[in-house]
Length: 423
Image (cartoon, rainbow, N blue to C red; front, side, top):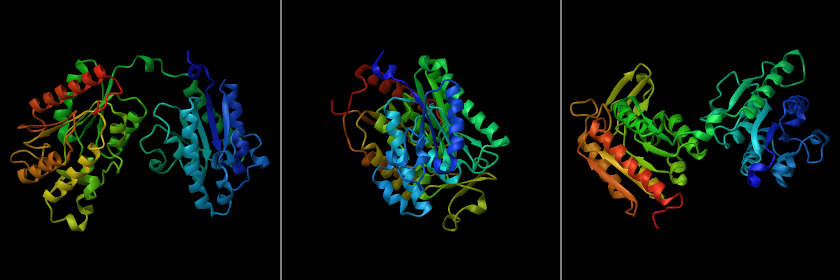
């Protein structure tokens, strides 16, 4: 075994010890009784580095913020929390990179939850993460996003040990201990895993691709391209749990550019390109921008071509100008790639609505998307753009996607992880 494999791995227990010291140490004692090696982290923003509050901590506020801690003491509560959030995120990321982390648990109110979960979101999918919080019964999306953070409601405030808090805290401690001590054995024997993006209007294509790749021995993960889906896929790529991507349905870019409700954010594609895993991309559902119920469509779009998908989702057809902007945005991302990729263009339509006679049929708008993308991607070895006189949901186009992916995948296997376009 390597030194990295032999080193002790710790579960990190984190809280603001100026207000939650007793509760955190109660949890730590239970974790150690379960057999975990634990490191205690104090993320208080209102205490100095040598305070007795932190005397039981392995890492104190000064260890996280350094000399900046003095500046934090002069800030208002909200600004101090923001600064500690930034510092803790960088700190916990470094701790994980050291190879010594087996899991993490946090205790907090609204401020502590913001601090700790920001750090948790920097950690890979699969690493145990438990957040016991007073705000876990409401909207947890800002804290969890697309990560596997287990949020547990504290029921009573994390403000003293009592008949209720002891039980809840003990459950949280035992939950993270169970996650850390009982890792799934199948992790070491998994199949090559492929991520692919899908919408209802590209289901026929993705299903045929998925079935074909499963027959070839791949484990296929399908993500609904609703913003969170794209982010979740890329988080798994960052975590090393996805070995290749068929980005068939890139509709999230349309919402990012035009202002729909399903954007994946400005970093879409970044994790995939940085990872240099096999990548095939298409233009699924870029004929549409997503809004909520019909009466929620912004006023400036109400005279556009709209399609009521259901009572909660209204789709708007993208136009020529928007498609050019979408194509430029995608091309700017792909131009940063340092490993091979393939772009496949279905010239007869990019969704079930964008088909001859369909409600979103618009050959001119589609052509603007295709032409602008092809013109904007910088030529280089290993980059290929292929057009097909097919609709995205035609069997032949799905088969072309599978063939293109297998070529890129085999190229990567043959040439190794260090292969770049220049080599």
